[in-house]
Structure formats: C-alpha cells, structure tokens
Image (tube, rainbow, N blue to C red; front, side, top):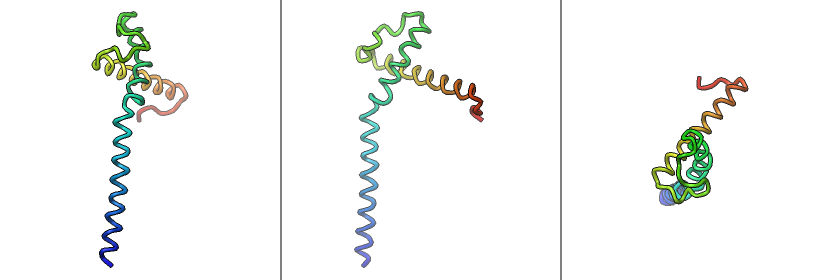
Length: 99
C-alpha cells in the first residue's frame, strides 16, 4: 500500500516539474516576442524624440540591425515610458499611486 502512495506522490511531482519546465521554456523562447519587440516599437519614438532624431540610427522597423545593447536600452526606455504613462493616467483618474 505504501508503494501505491509513493508512486502517486512521484507522479504528481513529475507533473509539477513538467509544468514548470514548460513555463520556463515559454518564458525563454517568447522573450523576443513579449519583451524586446514591444519595447523597441514603443521606445524607438521616445528615443528619437529625446535625441532630436539622432538615436537610434536604425530605422523603426529594423530592430534586428541594432546591436544587442542598443536593443536592450531602447526596450528598457520603452517600458519606462509605458510605466510613466500608466502612472499618469491612473493619477489623472484619481487612483492612489504608489502608496
């Protein structure tokens, strides 16, 4: 009877491990689609506006031609811009911001 309980416990642990491995795989493989691209397409106009049209030198639709550092910086600026807009809208609507 103990073997049956132990086998059931191991099966449950295997299923949980499989779920976590699947989530990790999705996170790693969707990094480009979920984070880099939206960050680039939102951060690019912000960077162009702040640098008066000089940076980044790559065109809006050419994030693959940019270096890894440039892509990361523009994506980070894009997400900072999204955060600032979200905080601004919520404070405008009267929601308490960052209590």
